[in-house]
Length: 201
Image (cartoon, rainbow, N blue to C red; front, side, top):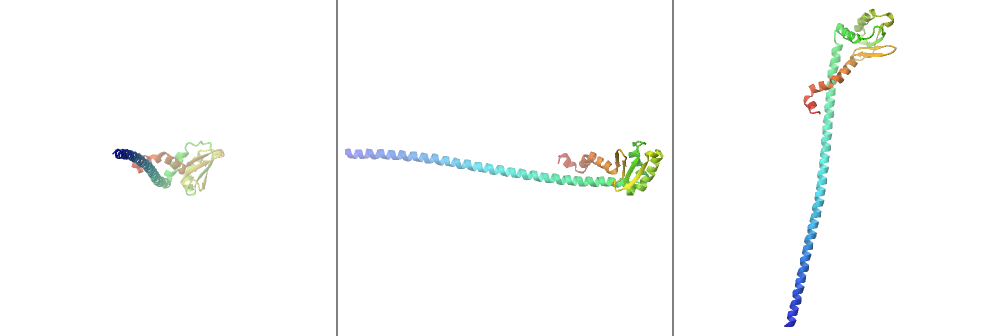
């Protein structure tokens, strides 16, 4: 009987120790499994965030490229329309009756000193139209300050360029329209594309 009790005590102690070891092992496995799960979740979350950020960067880049392309296309359209508008203005000046055209060019020349002689460069097509104006101006000038009309390839759109030994004065339709275009381009653009200019496109 004593031996049997000793055996039972040993077995009970061994069983308790085994259960303790198994319980500790189970807890360790649980901790390891939880730690592994957390590590996997962190890695997945990191990869997901990186992928999301990369997708957002790519999306922003494509959006910026699309906006830039639209802005460039809009700018090209505006410039093309402005070219047409100012070309039509040049044609209207060119098609003025001779007396109105002479008055226009004469008004531009009004501030030139009567003592400043030189060459008046003009388009070949304008030589006959501007001849009477030059004769009229020379009639009120000294011989030494006479103006000589020189037909040629410039200016392209009309008017004259006064060239003296000391200076040159551009009184051409070309320069007048170029100045007007720079001054009026924003206003004309607002008239043509009001919605886009209001948005600053």
